[in-house]
Structures are given as C-alpha cells and as structure tokens.
Amino acid sequence: MLRICVIGGANVDITATSKEAFRVGDSNPGRVEVSWGGVGRNIAHNLALLGDEVELLTIFGGGLFGPVIADACRALGMKIDHSEIAAEGTNSFFVSINNADGELVGGVADMNATEGMTPEWLAARQQVINSADAVVADANSSAEALAWLIDHCDKPLYLDAVSVAKAGRIQEAVRLSKRKEFFAFKCNAIENVELAEVTCCRRRYVSVGAEGLKVEEWITDGGVPRWKGYEFPALPCIVRNVTGGGDALLAGIVHAGPDATVEESARWGLECARCAVESPKAVSDKIKEL
Figure 1: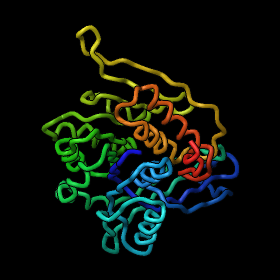
Figure 2: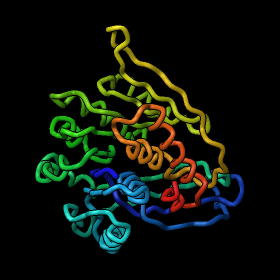
Figure 3: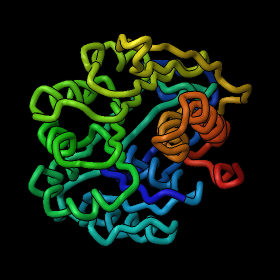
C-alpha cells in the first residue's frame, strides 16, 4: 500500500450517451447519467479502490453539489481534510456526449473552482504533499501551480495532461520552474503533440486508445542517455464508456509504484483502464478485485 497525494479537480459529471449513431445538430434519444468525477478525483477514487492511502487536495465547487461530493469522497475512504469547499457561484462540472459505442463526441468542462489552487494554496499544504510516497497532479491547476509542484514536491511527481486545451500548461510549467524536471506524465496521442518538447521527465505514458499504450523511458545505454520506447497492446474488452479510462490508466501506473518497471506499470495501468471502459461509469468498482 502506498501513500499517495492527488491534486486536481473534483466535479459533477453529466454524461449523455446516444442510443444510435450521434447526429450533430439534432436531438438524440439516449440516456443521461449524473455522477461524481473530475480527473484528480477519479484518479484518487481508483487508487482508493486499489487499496492505497489517498489524500485528495482539491477545491470543491460551491453551491449544492460541493458538500455532497466532499462527503462522497470521505465515504470512499479518501482523506480530504486539507481540501476546501469554494464560495457559492464557483463551478466544477464536466458535461460529455458519447456516441452509441461509448466514444466521446465532445464535452465542456467548467472547472473555475480549481482556479483557487494557486502556488500559495499549495505551499500551505507542502507538508501534506511531501509526506506521500508519490504525488499526482492534473492540469486543471494553472501552469504557475504546476511549476510550484515541480520545484517543491520532493517525491515522484506524475502529471496528467487532462485535455488538449490544458496540456500546454505542463509545458509552460516546466518553462516557469527552476528544477525543470519531474518523474512522469500521462497523456493521449493528441495531447502528446502539445507536449513534444517536454523531455525533462523520466517516463512518458501515451495512451493510444484501442491500440493500447506507448511508453518512453529515459535511460543510460553504454554511458549514453537516450529515450527507450515500448508499446503495449490494449487488453481485449467491450467498450461501454471511454470517459474515465485515462484516469484509471494513470491510477494503475501510480499504484504500481515509482520503482516498478515499465512493464509492471503498464500492466497495472492497462488492467485498470479495461475495467473502466467496460463500465458505464467513469470509475469501476471491479478495480478493487485486481
């Protein structure tokens, strides 16, 4: 069991899945589900199911849903004593539309509550952050906050790109930081284009959807440092919902531990991702059976 600090978004997920092929510009019959989500919260949820000791640092949105999500996190076993509930008027919502096959058609994220997670906010929680065995942060935080983490987190730091729109924050964070290096990041193939210049980490985990996972590890070969590439096929599965698959992937990678081999971390990540995409929910309870 690892002690893991997760820093990131916690929000309400509203997921709409069409019954048939999605028709743009039209009303589509289907089903709509409401659940608790957020990249950081989902990663923390998965890690808690895997049996790790999880501290979630977030700012829950104000209004009706913030306290409800906070109570749900506690009920799942996450520690949230150092998180906050924002003033009313701030939001943490993600609305996604899926095709009938579970593939994401598009989505809108309103995560303005996380704007309060400034470098100063993180500095007040530095002892909590550095008491963990590993730290995970999503790119819902600003580039300045991520730069602070790169400079002040003294444990292996994993970053999640979240989306194409937010992936650039990791690149900007490296530019702003003094240390300019961290342990690993996870992204998808499109986000990886935005992160091509980020070469100051030990590992790069790139999800390529149905094709599986690509990993690059910085090694020294015969005294010469270089990137070593790996490719791992996706595990056979029936896809019901891709939302949350990447969060489960990173949770499995982190659960394997910073000292795990690339093969071990990829195996854990892909097993967790399979559980997630086979579930109609963003987080699958089946993960606790792994």
